[in-house]
Amino acid sequence: MSDYETRKAKCKEVMKHEDESYSDFCIRLIKTYSSKKEDFSKFDEEDFRWYLYDENIAVLNKNYAYVIISEDNIDDYADIFHASKNEDGTIDFLLRYYNGGCSFDEALTTAIDKMNKI
Image (cartoon, rainbow, N blue to C red; front, top):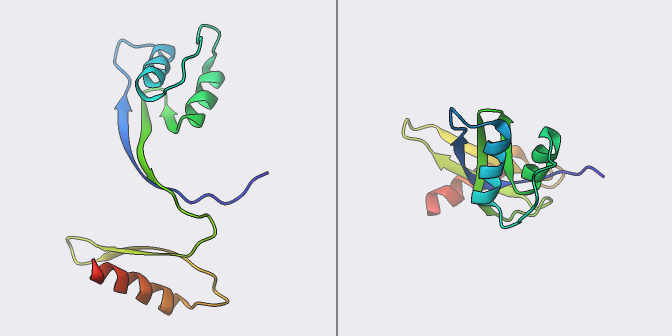
Protein backbone atom coordinates (compact mmCIF):
# COMPACT_ATOMS: atom_id res chain seq x y z
CA MET A 1 0.00 0.00 0.00
CA SER A 2 1.30 3.45 -0.85
CA ASP A 3 1.76 6.11 1.81
CA TYR A 4 3.58 9.39 2.36
CA GLU A 5 7.33 9.34 2.96
CA THR A 6 9.39 12.12 4.45
CA ARG A 7 13.14 11.86 4.14
CA LYS A 8 15.88 14.25 5.09
CA ALA A 9 19.27 12.90 4.16
CA LYS A 10 22.69 13.54 2.73
CA CYS A 11 23.72 11.78 -0.45
CA LYS A 12 26.70 11.70 -2.71
CA GLU A 13 27.03 11.20 -6.42
CA VAL A 14 28.94 8.15 -7.63
CA MET A 15 29.95 8.07 -11.29
CA LYS A 16 30.28 4.99 -13.48
CA HIS A 17 33.82 4.50 -14.71
CA GLU A 18 34.19 5.03 -18.44
CA ASP A 19 35.23 1.43 -19.14
CA GLU A 20 32.74 -0.10 -16.65
CA SER A 21 29.61 -1.98 -17.74
CA TYR A 22 26.29 -1.15 -16.12
CA SER A 23 26.32 -4.50 -14.28
CA ASP A 24 29.85 -3.93 -13.01
CA PHE A 25 28.86 -0.43 -11.88
CA CYS A 26 25.92 -1.85 -9.91
CA ILE A 27 28.08 -4.56 -8.36
CA ARG A 28 30.67 -1.94 -7.34
CA LEU A 29 27.91 0.14 -5.72
CA ILE A 30 26.64 -2.87 -3.81
CA LYS A 31 30.09 -4.03 -2.70
CA THR A 32 31.03 -0.52 -1.57
CA TYR A 33 27.80 0.63 0.08
CA SER A 34 25.84 -2.49 1.05
CA SER A 35 26.45 -5.01 3.80
CA LYS A 36 24.49 -7.70 1.95
CA LYS A 37 26.36 -10.36 0.02
CA GLU A 38 24.54 -11.88 -2.92
CA ASP A 39 25.25 -13.87 -6.05
CA PHE A 40 24.73 -11.28 -8.78
CA SER A 41 25.49 -13.59 -11.70
CA LYS A 42 21.80 -13.98 -12.60
CA PHE A 43 20.77 -10.37 -11.98
CA ASP A 44 19.37 -8.37 -14.88
CA GLU A 45 18.99 -4.58 -14.99
CA GLU A 46 15.62 -4.66 -13.23
CA ASP A 47 17.00 -6.89 -10.44
CA PHE A 48 19.86 -4.45 -9.85
CA ARG A 49 17.47 -1.50 -9.84
CA TRP A 50 15.25 -2.99 -7.11
CA TYR A 51 18.18 -4.31 -5.08
CA LEU A 52 19.85 -0.90 -5.10
CA TYR A 53 16.54 0.80 -4.26
CA ASP A 54 16.27 -1.38 -1.15
CA GLU A 55 19.80 -0.30 -0.20
CA ASN A 56 19.01 3.46 -0.54
CA ILE A 57 21.01 3.80 -3.74
CA ALA A 58 19.27 5.59 -6.60
CA VAL A 59 20.68 4.90 -10.06
CA LEU A 60 19.21 7.79 -12.03
CA ASN A 61 20.66 6.75 -15.31
CA LYS A 62 23.28 4.24 -16.36
CA ASN A 63 26.16 6.65 -15.77
CA TYR A 64 25.72 7.81 -12.18
CA ALA A 65 23.97 7.04 -8.91
CA TYR A 66 23.18 8.83 -5.68
CA VAL A 67 24.03 6.99 -2.48
CA ILE A 68 22.43 7.95 0.84
CA ILE A 69 25.30 8.40 3.29
CA SER A 70 23.33 9.68 6.29
CA GLU A 71 19.68 10.14 7.07
CA ASP A 72 17.56 11.67 9.82
CA ASN A 73 14.53 9.75 10.99
CA ILE A 74 11.43 11.86 10.52
CA ASP A 75 7.93 10.80 11.49
CA ASP A 76 5.86 10.82 8.31
CA TYR A 77 2.98 12.43 10.19
CA ALA A 78 4.88 14.89 12.40
CA ASP A 79 4.89 18.61 11.75
CA ILE A 80 8.02 20.01 10.12
CA PHE A 81 9.13 23.59 10.61
CA HIS A 82 12.56 24.04 9.03
CA ALA A 83 14.19 27.18 7.65
CA SER A 84 17.74 28.07 6.69
CA LYS A 85 19.25 31.36 5.58
CA ASN A 86 21.16 31.49 2.30
CA GLU A 87 24.24 33.58 1.59
CA ASP A 88 22.19 35.94 -0.59
CA GLY A 89 19.84 36.71 2.33
CA THR A 90 16.92 34.59 1.10
CA ILE A 91 15.48 31.84 3.28
CA ASP A 92 14.75 28.26 2.22
CA PHE A 93 12.00 26.54 4.19
CA LEU A 94 10.33 23.17 4.51
CA LEU A 95 6.97 23.09 6.27
CA ARG A 96 4.52 20.29 6.94
CA TYR A 97 1.59 21.05 9.19
CA TYR A 98 -2.10 20.38 9.55
CA ASN A 99 -3.81 23.48 8.23
CA GLY A 100 -6.84 22.87 10.43
CA GLY A 101 -4.75 23.70 13.49
CA CYS A 102 -1.98 25.94 12.16
CA SER A 103 -1.87 28.69 9.56
CA PHE A 104 0.90 29.25 7.00
CA ASP A 105 1.92 32.40 8.90
CA GLU A 106 2.26 30.45 12.16
CA ALA A 107 4.18 27.64 10.50
CA LEU A 108 6.64 29.98 8.79
CA THR A 109 7.10 32.04 11.96
CA THR A 110 7.85 28.85 13.92
CA ALA A 111 10.43 27.75 11.33
CA ILE A 112 12.14 31.16 11.26
CA ASP A 113 12.14 31.39 15.06
CA LYS A 114 13.81 27.96 15.24
CA MET A 115 16.37 29.04 12.62
CA ASN A 116 17.23 32.18 14.57
CA LYS A 117 17.80 30.19 17.79
CA ILE A 118 20.49 28.08 16.16
